Image (cartoon, rainbow, N blue to C red):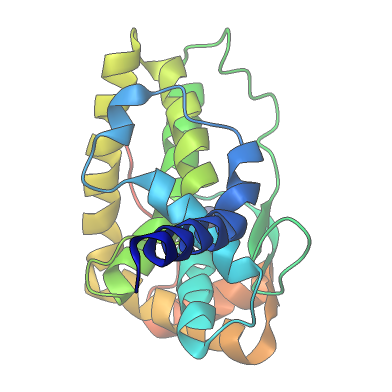
Length: 227
Ligand SMILES: [Zn+2]
């Protein structure tokens, strides 16, 4: 290959790569710069997420989405947060979803009571449990579908913290705590059961999900004390 041909080849490969990843640039960027330097780099996950969305999903990708959404669903049940459905049916915006019911009278911007703090922490736990389940299922691989979960977690953490640095550190702490909680044998059995049910049925309602969690974990009232 001549030098001219090599240059043309590199230019072509570059434009193909950029072509796959361009849509992610329109997505909201993190305001927490410190997180971009962590080993778990969500910029990369974002690119991968969009790229996968443009092609047929492999079984591995489907499992990643199923474990991710199962993590959200099980964490919601553990934290007493209601949701309407958990689903792995892709739509125009996402590869799957867990549609939660907002807390009533939740005002984190001006209320600092114990109940509000619990709810913020519960929401952060639920947000991180999705990527965390994906991370555990794939033996520590970077989660694929996680950018918005982390952005939302950091925004929520800012209500509990006095600075950006503290909020970043808080989310890092919660990530470690969430890993430990979902790694507990009974919680992981519940996540596996929900992920498998999602791979078969695609969408589960709250009561069905809760029933499956009770059955898999052997706990009548699945819960976690986050305070
Ligand atoms: Zn998620």
